[in-house]
Amino acid sequence: MKISFATLFTLLVPTAAYRLKIITDENGERRLKPIPKSVIEHGRKMKELITARRLQQESGESQPAGYVDPSQWSGKYCKEWNVRANITEVVGSESDGGHTHSFPIYFAEQMGLGAVGYFQDAATPTSDEDESCVFNAAFNFLPPNENGQFDNQVAISGLCEGNSNVITGGTGDFACASGYEYFTGDDGDWLDFTVYYCSGCEW
Image (tube, rainbow, N blue to C red; front, side, top):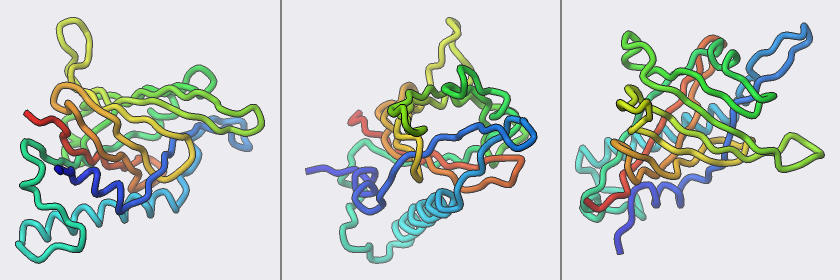
């Protein structure tokens, strides 16, 4: 039986979902609700785990119990993108009473390129008693095709409160993607998060 690193990672690291939220402060201004420290810490731990496993693999060191040899995922590969979002642009993107967002995203290592795509999401409330909700989202990478559609997308879904988000699929360069998107920083001006996915296609 073949098993991907993403499947193994699901077993090793409990995951939940977290959605950005815009709130009204004491001055009546709309601003981004600070990401809980526990969410940032969770994201950093996930990033450290992925890095440690990759270094072990590259060095040829013995692997931890439960490790699956990369040869078991014929035709598959894993990749990590470090992405940033400007908080002012995030707040300005809010629409439909906070149920939708659409803001530019940037590669952390290549900020000089400018925006490389957009993050778009839509949330659906699940309770009349609190702010519980579910959401669907996508990273849409530039450029669009001649019809104005995005060929390269990463799809995400989850609950609105938790630690990280689950990648449920993708198109184009991200076809059959599965993995996680998690937050690793919030300095008041920029949000830092990581998109980690493995291709699930057999070709």
